[in-house]
Amino acid sequence: MRALSGVLALLALLLAAPTTAPNQAFPLRPGDRVVFVGDSITQQRLYTTYLETYFLTRFPNWRLQFRNVGWSGDTAWLARRTSLNESHLFSRDSALVARTVCASVDEGLRRDVLALKPTLAFLCFGMNDSRLGERAVAPYSTALRESLHLLTSSGARAVVLSPSPEQPRQPGSRRNARLLKLTAAGRQEAARAGVSFADLFNPVLQVLRQGLALDPSLALIPDAVHPAPPGHLAMAWATLRELDAPSLVSRVDFNAASRSVRCQGCRAAQVRVGPREISFRRQDDCLPWPLPPSTRSVWALTRVQEELNRYELRVTGLRPGSYRLEVNGSPLGVFHSRDLAAGLNLSRYPQVAGKGPELQDAVCRKNDLYFERWRHVQLGNHLSPKDRERRLAALDAGIEALETRIDRLRRPKPLTFRLVWEFREAKGDGG
Image (cartoon, rainbow, N blue to C red; front, side):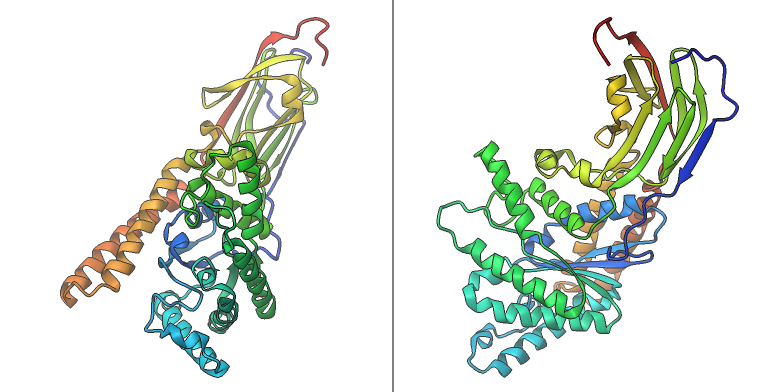
């Protein structure tokens, strides 16, 4: 690279393009009130939180609200929320079965979901349903059909998520065969209703098999049913991939020889090119998806960073050699000019994550508060009416304060990138 001195007043070329917009099939919209409905896997508030933080960081200018109403032990016909007599589900009278399922779904969905006035609902059932064997398929399908009817009639959009797989503790388990049949039934009901469907069963099972082949002690789903954090991230990854979620956070292509920059999903300013270094200020439209360190064991298995979290920097036209990359004065590492020319995905580095970890923590605390509000106070019978109203008001204030903080944390701050020539490539080293 020819030596340059001083500060460039203008770049030869500076192009800024907006962040890649989601396609029309992607279910999320600005202003959405999103409700996650499911069983204990949803009640764990892990895959749902990972989805929430993806949506919040990828679309920071959209006003969004999220609520989780998962209920441990529940089924698609909402047996744990209502006064359902489950013995009626297996009557030979198909009309009685349909009436029983629809009455239970209507009761539970109106109280726990429709009361929140959702514009988008994610439904994830099947693990408990599958315990009933083949006879569960018919009530499962009927329950989904009624849920989708109620949601779409209220003006809400819906996404049907298949159940996640079991990690069998003993050979010969039949649970996954049953879960696969419920996956097919869910796909059929989603198609019938004209709503989105995401197959979690097959992608997560594939990740599980690949992981066990590499490490037979891998406990993606430690108790066979409830995923650990890596398993929940695999569920979130599968959901977003199935829904064709945008993979790009932002991209900077810098040509040092022509002194030009192309940007997508960000803007570059204060660009300086000197004899030994390049620097610029990068203002991103959105933050990288904050992935908790506890999920790291499935990053490579899912390629989640490459498929859904691309925060890219590409620098061409450099003199051959190695370069130290810094962000806001903090070193990321030393990279060869060949690697910089090929392009780097920097989403793994905390220096570019902004307030992502704080955002993740605030979302977890907000979701815990809502669970306390809904299950223990709103639906609890241990409080007097006066105490209940007082507790609800206090919890609502706490939730509102956390949502205000979350909205602030999801806004990207400008970052200063600096690339310093460390040493010349050895003669005959190539490149």
